[in-house]
Length: 195
Image 1 (tube, helix red, strand yellow):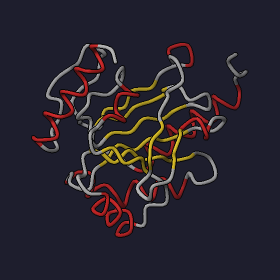
Image 2 (image 1 turned 180 degrees about the vertical axis):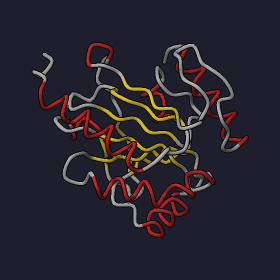
Image 3 (image 1 turned 60 degrees about the vertical axis):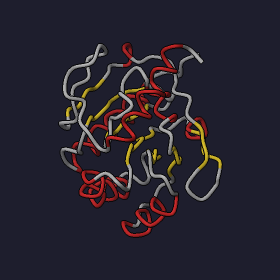
């Protein structure tokens, strides 16, 4: 584990004690506190494919690599986070609208008991799986675009699994997420695969 990853884990642990907070400023990678800011990367600006795998809320194995070839919307949430609860119906609406165009995958952060997260999923009829990450380690996959406490937030991966867009903070609107994801899907369809 690199010093950078160790620092990210330690910060995630401290933030787990403080609850749902905004970032309160601009980080060295150019992200801003959770105000719903959308950042889109051109194909040339996209880095390596994201490696993200873990155990789902029901114990199933989940790996973002299984979804290569289609855009993936990664939803960072927690049942304990009031903005996540408030926006859940909108996120579900976006997932339903994009059902045939993109895969959604959640990261459930810092819920101490998976039963809380499972109740959230049942209550809001969430149609996509989520990686259960009570320690926040799943966020290390996004260390270049998200801070450990970037919750709620959204990352749209292109068909090659690279970060194509981020929304930091509460979802501005269902249509924002739908349109950005469709644009990325259209771009991916028109590009040759990276080798």
